[in-house]
Image 1 (cartoon, rainbow, N blue to C red):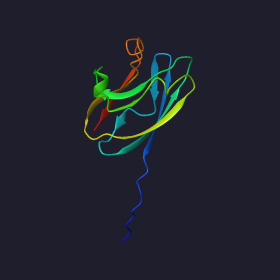
Image 2: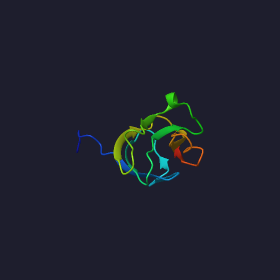
Image 3: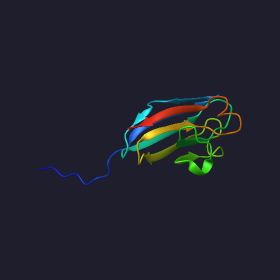
Length: 110
């Protein structure tokens, strides 16, 4: 019998923030699984990155977040996150005008 006691490797998810768009390498996730979000800010604008319940705009309800100060043009940040529950969520940027301009991506956790 083989017993492995090491840490499980997180699944890597590529995220690119540019203009008013979020490109992500996958949009469906598994509850209880660890993910490593590799977030890159492209273009000439700074962005923020949050995981929120779908349609939520209250920053206090963010499940995970990277501030605009950390995601200036050309910056990159890595965030590890585990979805604890199933549901409908979104990746979004709430810098004034960005969310309203379409900077959000629906994701589903099953």
